[in-house]
Length: 105
Image (cartoon, rainbow, N blue to C red; front, side, top):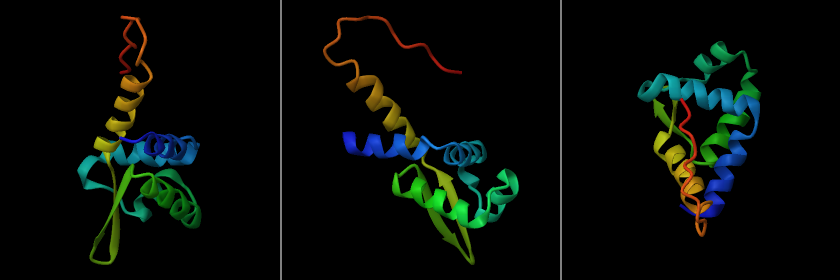
């Protein structure tokens, strides 16, 4: 993964509503959510939600698929894992520390 992609992903998540949307998509897994379902769950205005979804899609953290007349959004957990892996591996290059970062539960 390229550094620019990591920065883009982190920047997309560095906004409270986008983080909430991403979390909601992770929770539902492969089923994904329509914008209407996200709107109902989070109470975000449709135009605002559209903007945030676009940012998450552009960062590669969320995918969009058309299903009939609906759009289904899903979290790309593989991409998020790559972002976290990049941070873990690249930020430790050249260090002598054997100290491991604690696991987050």
